[in-house]
Length: 312
Image 1 (cartoon, rainbow, N blue to C red):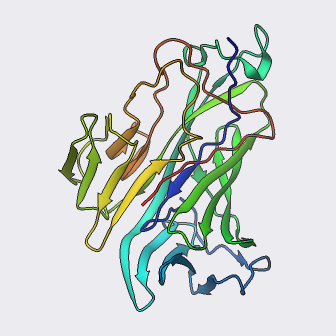
Image 2 (image 1 turned 60 degrees about the horizontal axis):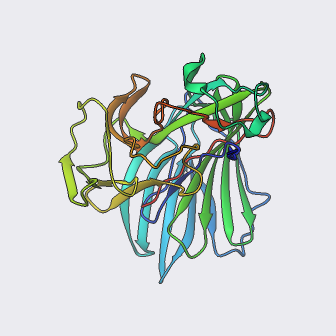
C-alpha cells in the first residue's frame, strides 16, 4: 500500500516558561527591523542596547518575555521569563538552539517519486551538519495574533535559511523553527534538536518513563549525552525559578514507519553526538528507524522547511 511521505517541516515548540534561542558565531551587533511589527497588537518589542526584548500576553494576566541578544558572538536567548509583569521569573538564560540536519538521498526513480515509502535512505550515503547561525539580520513581524522573530543566516550543508521564533497571544507556547531550503534535488533529511548552554541553567531533569513513572536526575555538566525512551516525548529541565519542558510538534515529528516504536526520541547531557558543545536537552530521530524501510523526510528543492518544536 502506498503511504504518503510528508514534506519536511520539522519544528520545535517551546511552551509557557521557555522560549528558544539561536546560535551565533561572529562578532558585532545585528540590526533589528521593526517596520512590520504592529505596536497595537498587545505585544511589546523594543531594542535596549544589545538586546531585543519582546513581551507578549500568555493569558490570565501573565506575560512571557524573551530577550534576544543581537550580538553575533552571544547566545540568542539572553533570558527567558514568565509571570506577572511586576514579578517575572527567570526560567533560563544564555541558551542556544542546537540543530543537527542529517542529509541523505531520496530514490525518486524506482517507485512513486516524492511519495515513495519503500526507500532505504538510511543505508545510502548521508552526512550530518550542525546548523550554524550568522545572525545576518533580525526582523519582528506581526501576523494577526502572532508575533514572529526572524533571524536570518542559518546554514547546514546544502541548506540555508533562518530561525523563526513565533509567539502566540494568549498562550505561553513559543514555536521555534529552522526554516531552511536547498537547491539539491532528491534530498531527504532527519533532524536532532535541543537547547544548549555553556553553563547549564538546569539543576534537575524530569521525564516519564515507558512504565508511566516519573523519573529525575541531577544535572552534571560533565555527563556525556545519552538517549532515553520516554513517554510523551517530553523532557523537563528545572531551574531555580521555574521549569522548561521540551517536546516535538505532535504531527510533524515522525517520518513514516509501519509501527509506533519508542526509539529513544529524547536526549540530554554534554557534547551530544560529538557535534554539539555544552550541556543540552532535546529531541532526536533514530536514523535507522525500525531497521526496515526508513524513508526520512522529503526535502524538495526550494520548498524545504526544517523546524523543531518544544514546550514548557
